[in-house]
Amino acid sequence: MRRRTLLAVIAAGLTVGVMLGLTSERWAPLMALDALSIFDGEPSGEDRWTSTNFAANSILATRRIATLGDTEIFAVRSTVDMWSGMPHPEGVLCVSARSPRLVFFSTGCVSETVFREHGLRGVLSAIEQPSGFPTWRTERLITVVWSPTGEVTVVDLTDEVVLSPDELYSEEERAVGLDIPFIDTLRFTGADPDVSRLVAESVSLPELGPGEIGRGSDSGVTTTTYLSVHAGATADAERSVCLTVRFNDELLPPVCDSLATFRESGITLQLVDEGVTLFARPREGVGFDVSARETR
Image (tube, rainbow, N blue to C red):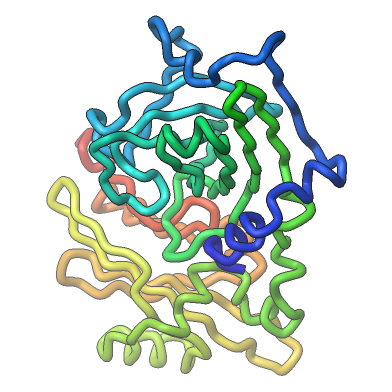
């Protein structure tokens, strides 16, 4: 399920989670007050929230308004709508969040005029970071209701709405590895003729790929990384995944491992003479390490 689809579902029925008694927290001031008064005075260290997705001068002020487990929820005054990216020079109010290893996206931004009348209802979805994937799986889904009088209700809907890979993919799709974003994207990427020829000659004709999954340059090293999936030698044999690398101008022989091993830990290729380690890992992305080369 794509992130936008998930958000549309939740935005349409935001209050359902509160009524069902799901994992939630509610903060209410001792007396009714203007919720925007939290922006008065200097922020504490706990109030500071930053984002690399927006220019620093577009974030006018931030305040922590709630916590849910290890997740902190922030009210944000901004000159940019944090969902659409559209500028709003007059300023808007948004909600965002911070949690270890997660990056949150928000649907909740309104003008101060709208907030004073209706408050703010937003949805925060999160993906794991860092991510080298062309597609992402939603890891957390949280709804936030912030009233004009300062009451904040936060509901974690992750377990109720976000599907696990077992639910998203059939047994046949998982057997091919389509639950792994790297492999799924091979269905839509073109193949380099030279890489295709090398893979076919060295391993076998691939079921998927070889498709380019990454490229980079650092310390005099330029790499392009390709991935392919191959059927087993017999009908009941497990598929294999192969990593092929173009190192500078040299196309290196494929390195292969079982699909199960790739799903668990990826594939690593060490070029000892060059002091370079290349890798493709489902949870970490694709890249290379030149630290050994730099110490020579």
